[in-house]
Image (cartoon, rainbow, N blue to C red):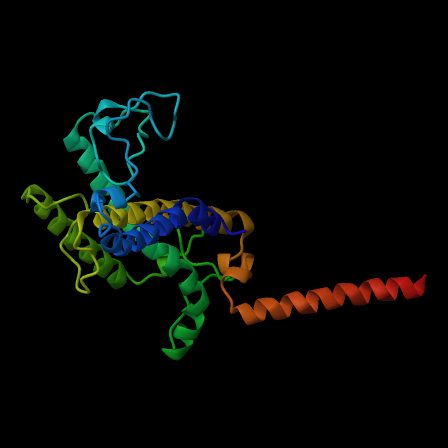
Length: 268
């Protein structure tokens, strides 16, 4: 099974499932609080998991949690800092800023990597341009090589855009606005960020968990393609093709096996 899929189910899906359960519970709470003697806080049973206030690390139960993490209520904080990188709140927030930026880039890359392998040649043919994929249909990467195929103008555009966004984020963080938290750029054109604090915390948790899964997944893409010399879409095609094709291939495979067994039996 593809590395990304396995990691996503281990780390990403629980966060999403919990978020859905929490949202459903919130919608039901207005009916529950109508019961005599029952407040909304009593009816709202799901609580956000947190390391805050706990002496022992949730991620490594036999290791004591660093003090800075014990006092932090950042989403996704499970007391994991065995090397003691974060020594105070300011350092912790700087590391979270870096983590959320890399997480968001990794989530985009986790989608963009296989999509580019599926569509690059057809798009190149349409615009009568050279394809960026190598002979094994692998995307250019540090391990795959082929980075020189990317036009310098595109590198400049990407680096300039990333630098501008990063500078804006740094400036926003330094303003120390009351509602600021690491990664909050104030960009929500579709108004998807929930209005209530509890659901917001679940959204933050879902984002950081999926981002961590994506960082592991993209690393898995790079290593998988370097070792197998195959594109991830070819190495695990079941994840990147229509389900009808998968079912058809499975049926053909079963029929082929049955035919081979039948032929061998007849020969005997």
